[in-house]
Length: 217
Image (cartoon, rainbow, N blue to C red; front, side, top):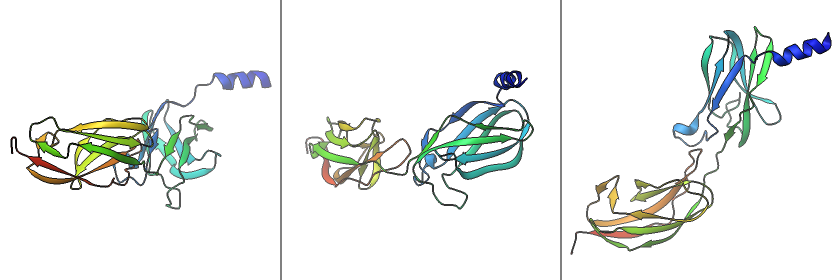
């Protein structure tokens, strides 16, 4: 009898399927990635307790308690804080769902990672420092310490988002425009920042001055 009951429980369908989680986020980035979106599909209507747990299985944050949910797609959102309102330590977390009607608790295997540490970027070189409007542009060489997206700023304003690159040395070409619009002739202080997958942005590099001139000036 015990064996038959065990086998029946193994064959019983899980009340939840198809989890889709934002794999990494930063509650301190002040960006669209500061909240995790945890989506699951419910097979049946039920009353659910939804809890975030850490790697040791300890409860960290209650997202829902005794909340009725209809079948279909359900989305829970987590701001990366514990029940006391404090930002949790960096690391991997999971979603635990208790179904009152089914009297089952499911620990979703997919993890969501909290990452509040910003990346670092080093500006290696920028040549030439004098650009003609409509000319070939400047080559910017930099070094990333982790996989991230380089951001080019002129006088503190974002003018170019580079492609995501792996750790190591890489380069960008800048044609003297800001989002496709030519900058006015003059001097500009260029800096680089890096943005990681979680949305964290590095401190800016030391500024280098570039002069933009009209053709044949």
